[in-house]
Amino acid sequence: MDIHELRRLIAQRDTYSILETVDVETGDRTVLQEFDYVIEAPNWTRDGRLLVYNSRGRLYTYELTTGAIQELNTGFAIDCNNDHVLSADNTQIAVSHFTYEDATSRIYIIPFTGGSPRLVTADGPSYLHGWSPDGRRLAYCAARGDQYDIYTIAAEGGPETQLTDLPGLDDGPEYSPDGRHIWFNSTRTGLMQIWRMEPDGANPTQMVQEDANCWFPHVSPDGRQVVYIAYGKDDVAPGDHPANKHVEIRLVSSGGGKSKLVAKLFGGQGTINVNSWSPDNRTIAFVSYRLKA
Image (cartoon, rainbow, N blue to C red; front, top):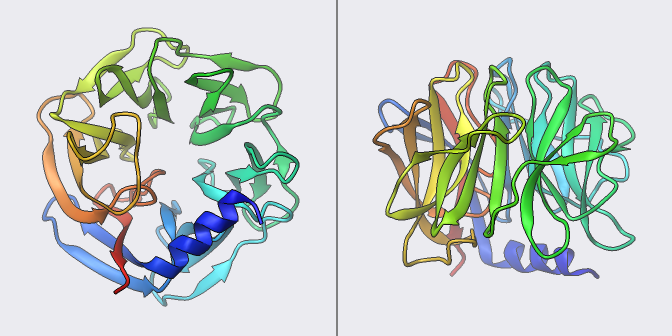
């Protein structure tokens, strides 16, 4: 048994998961379903019908109108983590899967209707976070040597392009819907904060300055708003995003400025690792957690 399977089994034993949505304007929360094991990182399909989440290495869909759950056919990729992203046309899903040869995460693309995974990143560890709106490139966090930085690669595979190289951790890269920026989080100023840059890595700009450690910026489909998860400054190290912490989901204009609180919850790792905006720009899907007695 590898360390990833052991971690999942421990989490399944100790944690309940609550799949929820929250209205970003009113803060109203809706519980969709509870699970007596760990699920993570819901994506919303562009037709508004399904959420995609991962659990125990596999991917599932949750139908919002009926609550029906169905496992996606991901071929041999059955050790997927919480970094999975749908293509803009929703015909494909890219996943980060721990390969059996070395238990290292690499990125694969799979037809959304099911099929054989196609390897994209030859090197690992590589953790997917973004897919360009034109479908041509993927953005991801990867360790090459001793440091994690942000890279992009053609969806067909090939040579990767390194976008960041400053000391500290850069993570969570996600394309804006117009393709003009990549949003990401970085410890380059001390605390983990929210940044964006041009798709070639030029002009990195800090967009949020919080007295907190802020992770995983997700841009709304209309490009106007960004949500992210915030840990208390003294609750975690800046470069860490553990599970089972008291955290906040916060909202900020994509032009920057003062953020507002959307929700407080017990969560962290697994809550909103990937973009979970509804197609109408109004609602976020997320996972909160509760420890078993």
